Image (tube, one colour):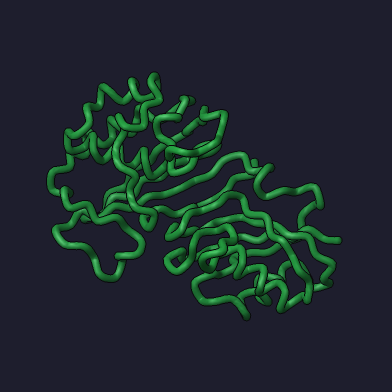
Length: 247
């Protein structure tokens, strides 16, 4: 048996997320179907994390065990020949049988892209969140609000309600904000993220930038864990899993 690690880029627009779903196509299902075509095996692939419907990835990592004799670096070529064009295997390599894409991950890098122009963009509409209040955003306030989230905190107040995770403490190592014309791109690097955590933090930072949330009250959300004190959950299509780190 061999363990193969793959790096995946995908446009999540037409999928119900990474994990196999009963009510629509998923990234995991499409790759497993492709593996069946090229190996004849029923293979279960393990992803580093589950992305929601509409969320994209440039550097999702997954692994699978196979009996196939296909050279490890050729799996990318073989899979890309049968996959839909909105899923691309960027790399493939053989790794030790002990490697696990999810459990061995040390940290992840996500990005969220905002468009603050007067009208929504046509070409980038599936990859950015158009904020209608863009002209009212104060970038100094936005950056100051972002700083509060760096470090180790209990992020219970920034998690989707109904989540059954018991340990809600996570560490965000860095939040980098880039501006280019009407686009604002926010990069979140952390050791792990709760369900909808990046999207809720982004919504909170955006609300702080227009004065809808008092920046000085953000620490109170950590203390109380009150989701209602935080901002909106921004739409999934502005979110992208950029990279998974293993060291």
